[in-house]
Image (cartoon, rainbow, N blue to C red; front, side):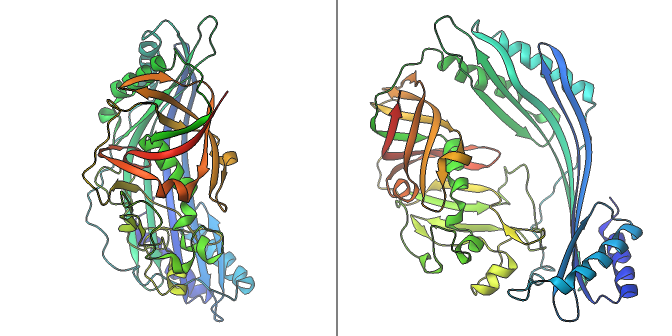
Length: 446
C-alpha cells in the first residue's frame, strides 16, 4: 500500500479537478496465509491479498455519496471520487454524517510491529505436528476435523480533505484445534481451543494443544443433567459471547433506532449487580488486534460501559455523538452507512463485599465453557436467550461433563443476578474477562 501522504496527494489532485471540496477516505489492506490439514496431510492452503477502500464525498448541498474501491492509485481514486460525487445527489437529508471533530487529534502512542510472515510450508508442518500430538493424547480422539493456522498483515489508513492523515499496520498469527471422539456406546464429543499472538514464533501452540486435549478428555464421561434452576459459572469465552450478543445495550445507534434494551435515559441507572464492571478498551495491552483509530479517524480509547453495575457509557460514532450531545468513542465502522461495534471488552469485578466463591468448594454448580447457536437462540430486542452449551456439573472441584443441555434466561436479569466475579482474568481474542457467577439460571437437560 502506498504511504498515506501519497494517497492524500492523489485524492486531493483528483478532487480539485472534479470540483470536490469535502471528502474522506478510509482503507484497509489484508495480506494473509492460512492452512488446514486432515489425517496428516494438507487439506487446504490459502493465500490472499484483500483491500477495501471507502470514499465519501459531500456535494455543495452537503449531501453525502459513498462508494468503495480496491485501488488506491491515482486512477482508482479518481474514479471512486467521481462515482461518490455522482451518488451524493441521492444522499440522505437527515442526520447527515460529518468529519470527526477528533480526526486530527493525537492517537495513542503504541508501537505496533509488522513482522515477516513464515512460508506456507512452515504453517503446514506445525499444524500437522499439532494434529498428530492431539490425536495421540487419548485413544478416544479419532480426528481433529476443525483446525487451522494462519498469519495476517493488516494495514489501515484514514484521511480527509481538512488534512487528517492516519496510517498503521500490525501482524498476528492464530491457531485453532477442535477434536472429535468416538467411544463404543457413547455419542461423539468435541472440544477445542484457540490461541492468537503477534507472530508465528510466539504463538502458543503447545498451550492450545494442552487446552484442547484437557477439555476433550473431560467431556468423555458425560452424564445427563436434571432440568432445574442452577447456580451457573460462565467461562470468560461464554460471558463475552453473551455481552456481544446483547451489545445493543450500549450501542448508541441501536438506542437511537429504538432497537435496544436501553434508552437515552438509561445512563446512570443500575442495570447489573454491583459486582460487574465492563469497559470497551481497544488499547488494552494484551489486545493483539489493537487499533488506534476507527473508520472515521477518531482515536480509540477506554470507554466505561458498566461500572459497579451502573450503565455509565454508550459506544458512539460521530453521528450518534452529535445527536446525543456526547463525544465519539472510536467505535465507528465505515461503510455505505456508519455502524458501531465494540473493539475489545475488559470485564472485571466492580464493588466487592469481601465474599469469595470457588469451584473447589462449590456444590451442584454448572460451569458453562461455551454457548452455541447465538444466531438462533438470542432475541436481542427482548433480552431473552435459550442456548445449547458445553459445560460441566461441578461438585467440590470434581467436574462431570453434561450431556446435551440448554441454558435460558433474560439477559438483564442475568446481569442483576451476578453474585461473584473472580479476580483472575483470562485474555481471549474477544476481550479480557474472569469467570462470572450467576445465582440462578434455568438449565434444561434431556
